Length: 292
Image (cartoon, rainbow, N blue to C red; front, side, top):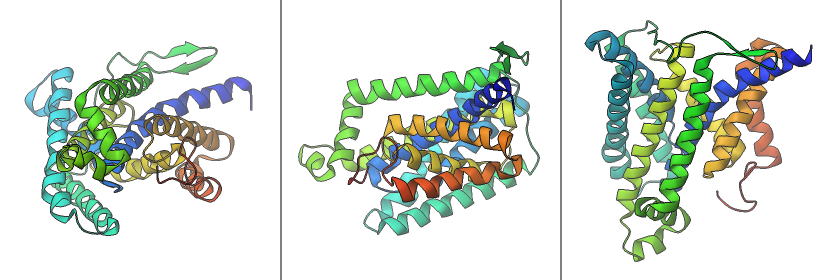
């Protein structure tokens, strides 16, 4: 195994890692607002890719417009999930709420299979397919789009939470919900915002990833589980940790598949999850002794 090959695996891992990072960020947003793991997050990713591909094929929309439609529809789905399923059961135990999100995931996946069928749907690369050579290894332009979307989304989320009233209110609810309510912050509205943002981020991840893997109704389940692993790895509830955890997990997957065997690629994420829970449950950037 040469250094160039290792570098190639590293670059390949960054592509999938960027997607995991966006999914993990969605997990952290909802967890901070509700204390619940939203296992429907992977389906938001699926909807982003499928709606974009379907809108281009059925309605002849340009890529940028189809992507906007996909983000808008997926955001609405996230809001409906909060209003129709999470909010009525808000006083239930966290286990019940988690089961609700699992049921929502299965429902969304089944509905997608009925609407679009089982076939894969291609999505054209945003900037062509000509590989770019970086220090002897190659990377596709679409991989740069994935990494760029991850970076831009992370910066936007940082700006929202740092400089906007809504972002600061969401941070307050994440730190101390009772105190936030005493200050006049409506907790239910912040939960709705968190689901909307998580759904939009998931859709963006699905749109930039679809040209690499193609869109299909059943891709959300595995992506969601790996995004959850990335969130735990980085520190559940920590935005920066989510980004870091996703990138690290993607690189570990690629290196494991290249250096050991591609048969173990999917298992690596769960091995990392178990190891992290045993060694440092709070994650890389999580605080020891806290719930974050």
